[in-house]
Amino acid sequence: MTILLYGLAALAEIAGCFAFWAWLRLDRSPWWLVPGVAALAVFAWLLTRVESDAAGRAYAAYGGVYIAASLLWLWIVEQQRPDRWDTSGAVVCLIGAGIILWGPRG
Image (cartoon, rainbow, N blue to C red; front, side):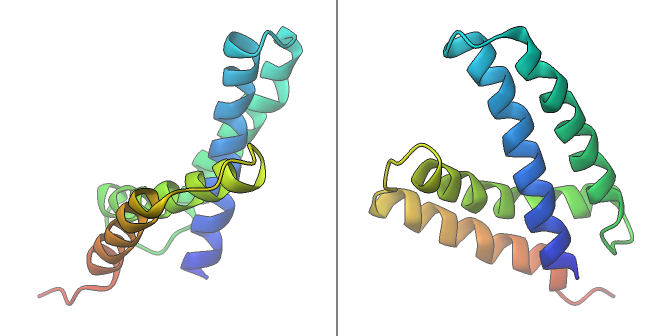
C-alpha cells in the first residue's frame, strides 16, 4: 500500500507543480492554478496516509519515489527520454528510499 500511496502522491505533486510551470513558463492561463492547487492538496493528504512512525521519515523516503516519478513524467508527458545518468541517479535514490523506509529499527 505504501508504494501505491507514494506513486499517487508523486503523480499529484508533479501535476500540481506542472500547473505552475505551465502558467509561469509556458504562458498558460492562470486558471491552470486551480487544478494545480487541488492536486498539491491531494498530494499532501496522500502523504499523511503512509504508514510511518515519523513524518520526516515518510517524506525522506518519498523523495526517491518523487525523483523516479519525475523522470517518468519527463519521458511520458514531456516526451524527452531520460539518459543513463538520469536513470542511474533515480536507481540510487530509490535504493536510498528503500533503506529509509524498510531499514530495521531498534
